[in-house]
Amino acid sequence: LSLSLSLNFVDFATKLRAISNPPPKLPKQSKQQLLLPLLNADHSLTDKTNMATEPKDPFGIIAKFRGMNIMDAATPDLTVKTLKSNQTIGEAITFLFKNKILSAPVEAEGKEDAPWIERFMGIVDVVMLTVFAMDALSSDPAGIPEEEEEGESADEPSVAHTISLLPTQFVQMTLAEMAENDLVWSQFLPVEQDASFFDAITLLSSFQLKRLPIVSGDSLVNIVTQSDVVAHLSKHLADFDALTSKTLADIGLAAPMNIKSIRSAQPAKDAFEMIREHKVSAIPVLGADGGIIGNISARHIYAVAHSGNMQYMLSLPASKFLTKLESPTGRWNIKSTAITCTANNTLAEILKKVVAARIHRIYLVDEANQPLRVLSLCDLLQPFSAANGEDCPLV
Image (cartoon, rainbow, N blue to C red; front, top):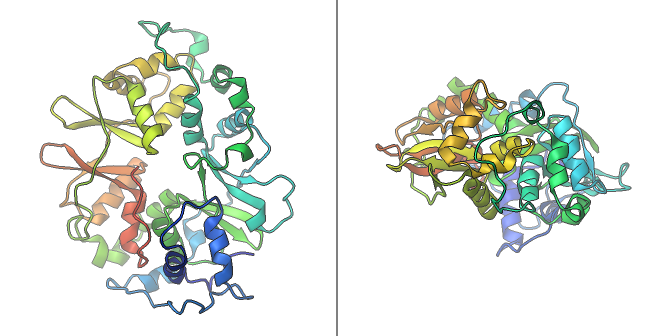
């Protein structure tokens, strides 16, 4: 079973909310399971709920999106690497690290020839898997050196070192055994390779999906991410000027929201604990005046996790942690600058910023550079979608 081009995701969004109201705490594949009763034999939606409506298109962009193919935003000739559900956490971290990829679909054991809805359990995010794994490490600062230990062995990242620090029982846990961990797993909800760009935007923005698998029949042929879609949009801003010329205030994305943060003097590990506790992917770092000076993300923690001085790095004040990450002569040379915007910036300006910086979030700040809210890629895609799905999660 696969989703065909005839599947109208706007209708699906409406019907999905209707049959799951109030929304229960659903297990993995819940959206797939809810979708099945709504499909005819030809995979088009039924009219059981009689709620199908043509989406409003005040900016005249939906027709243009429907004329664009989802594969236009995909990485050409991408080979999608997958994990098996019986692989251990240690094996998964090692596999993804060595292949330099941050996520992978997980195939159910013994289902290699089954339809995709039975074959794929979900998608594992190795960055958040590492964050989750690090929770198993002791937070006791005893024994952390006062100065960084330099040496040849410490200069090379080592996934083996990280795994050696983890409890054996944790490392040997299979992916299937942690399938209910929402921090690590995301839904496997694909579209056919002839789906439209509008389908991709609707799913990625309305269902909080960061990655959208693309199938041909039951074969997995590619994966499109939120970043891919935003990058593709940025190449066609002139085509959607009626919307992209609007400011954040104009399109309702300037309202302040509660945002988690740490001060520059706090240890970097406080950011890690917030990422894990609140299930977000980054935490802004504020200076003494409350202005934003940097950004600690799950990817930063993923980078330092594979070094021999991880505990030392996480014990540093956040400001010093950021300095070491960004040092051009250091082992990481990772940018940790917090990209910001104001309510008067246009949507086009914001899209250009996030694409140029290759980031997944941008902070809305006031005149004093104090953060008012964080805008995720999901937030930036929602104005392009006619479907009013769930609110984007904090990132």
